[in-house]
Image (cartoon, rainbow, N blue to C red; front, side, top):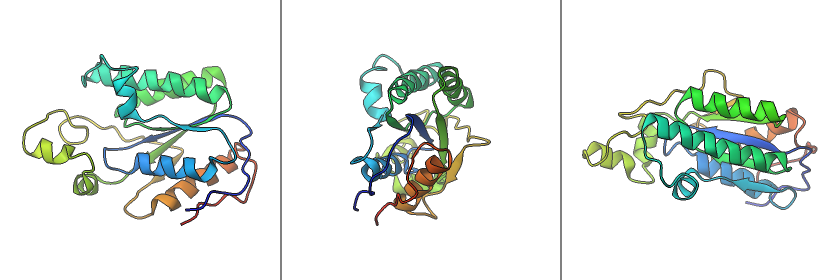
Length: 194
């Protein structure tokens, strides 16, 4: 994949990609980052990595999942406020968490874009990149989001993409198009190579 030609980020923004494990959130985020990396400051906040660092003491209870999401949202807003395109492929299974993160961005005047990577559970389980669904089926783990713990899909996300019907490149292009329409990217010639 070749990077996009000169893209200017007019203002930092957070793009929060929510969806089940295996939906394609990280793949789409990394595809976006690769497409714009040569022109703008961009960072991908990986949920698994952040759990090992800023949320190392948290478990997977509903309150801990909420706390983790709010912490990630705080870091994302801080980066975005400093003119970084911040891509956040984090499940954040609860509406209250995503609403709290959006509200924090709004209070700071920082753009927040919610993308629901709406790949169905059956496809996520088929892909099973981390082996979580197989472990849940075998009874080795409990509390897997979408299986025996709640995932609340966004009712009105800014964008919804299903990676069973579009490629990662097409999903990334949809996000970039939305950012252009919101006035956050200044060129109309951004494209994701395939």
